[in-house]
Image 1 (cartoon, rainbow, N blue to C red):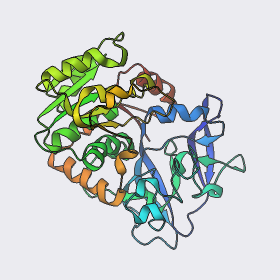
Image 2: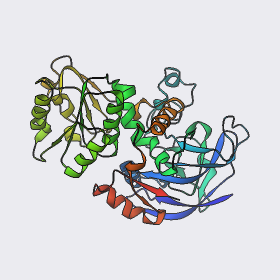
Image 3: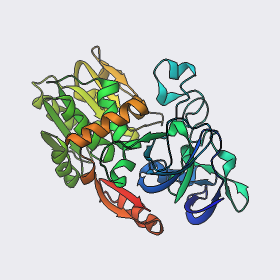
Image 4: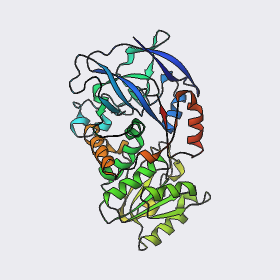
Length: 368
């Protein structure tokens, strides 16, 4: 039995640091000593999911024990974790949609914001079973996960950088490369330049986009956008309803037509239709941030032949995409180290959340 300090969500909007108990791994389970855990808005939201759970869904660490059915990992391996855990056998996995696995996914097949069914009974708090966010629970000194949640780190990479791959980096990069399939020489506009938006920007740069136009209301964020590959920036006005004024500026930069691709990365429901206003006829709008609220869309924005897609997690295939991202990092094409603006210890998680809400960090990371 392992005792581990962890951030525990109350379910009603708060969290506390408590000690959980974790059993030794069985079957396909792997015990990971967490070295770093990313911090994002989903972690903040998890405090209010109506259940007690171990927080955290971005992480990296070192394997300290394995179950008897584990085939591809050994004690001592360095790994990054993936929250959309595939089973490789269901209909969607067989279709290549491992990110929306019908058996394990925490956000599909009726398991929304659930921990799935992996290793649920192996982690306890005060003697009672406790769920782990997205079957990971990375805001803990140790966590027990399924083998399919792990990807080996095969390049020289600090754990703090590895920890952020399994959410915002994959979502942004994958939305460009896997979902939109951005072509070289095309024009891209990115609405919102937080952690996900910055990874959309560098994904577009790596894909060979010609113009990459960053739109935000925060001038400091726009300065960051230039560092990650934006060729143009537009400081939007808070009073610009639907970003229609910004859309006119985008069109002026794109031969009067609009961008070929527009990525919404703001998570603001009122801007759900905004990328449609930014693209040319037959262009593609991509809703990246996971807006789920009911919104109203002027159907004139769809004219003509425009496409609107809503991919999850950059259509991630962890054993394929994570090694690609690692190789791009090793080549110097994918910026990760600089994205980790500040690190915190577990006891300073409240401050980390505050800094996140204040927009101070490209990415904050807990270090264990």
